[in-house]
Image (cartoon, rainbow, N blue to C red):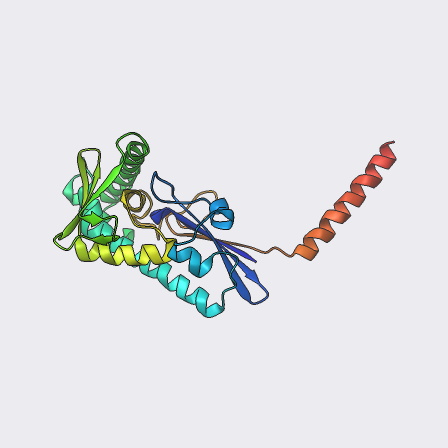
Length: 255
């Protein structure tokens, strides 16, 4: 059985494979110039030194307890994403009035005014477009820089009270040190990467009201989606042989 976790709100995907009571984990992470990896690189690339790969990668078999620990980390990530949105990220979005931003920090169930709910829905579309434009800038020549983060020690600089996320010369986010460190610890444990600008932008694009917005194609939650699929290999092989035999008989009849 396969379980696909689409954690678009942090730019990360996982595929969990259940094998005779144990589990294997495959991951991919949004790529920029300095961080990220594809599923192919997770399976076949040199991932040594990355905390998450050393714990979950290389075909390691995990117990139910290991999987529970992994799911707890994802659950904590959801909580931190919500806190970041409500205390830092949403307040950084331009061209949306403070009243609408305040409502976006609530759940849709707590918004009784239909007009305000519509304004919030329109704002989510604008936020996604703004986030998309930021991602294009990061992938271009401007790139992304963290001010207050020591890339050598991979820690917040001792004298810094905040982490400032810049794209080019523009300050995008101003994140308190303790909140960044909490987010970094969870993110690194899950992905093996440092957390730069792109994951914060993904939080803005896919994290707002993720519990209530559904993907029209899959029905899963946008931001933290979950899908499962049964893969009975013996049954699948039998079905393929049966279809092949039927096709052979059909060709013979036509001939």
